[in-house]
View (cartoon, rainbow, N blue to C red):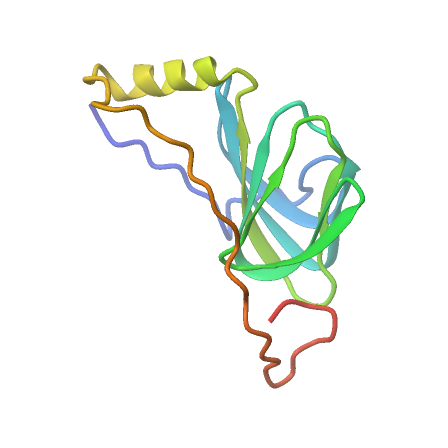
Length: 156
């Protein structure tokens, strides 16, 4: 067995980004039947146009910040925040004056498929002693502290 290293980030992104984007570079890190993982780098004034996807998608902001839309709702997002894009619902993301980097994780439509792929990749294992419960929670309130040179309309 050998360790497989996947490279992404500066120097490894496609300059055109996913279809329907402006000002975004991206790199697919992994893609298979169980889902997809990709990195997206948004420049200033970048956007992913509203679109839908048949898979539940997690949009994990790892640097900078911008905006996301799900259906008719809009929200600011910043590094350390994640957004769930439900399947078959229009969603979008964009920036204004600040760049943003995000990891996008598309999950399999069938949870059994995801579990099967993971089990196959990780090898045999004993079943958990007790069922694993789904985490429940919400984002903690973020203090509003405008910093020097903060741009209006962008996350802190």
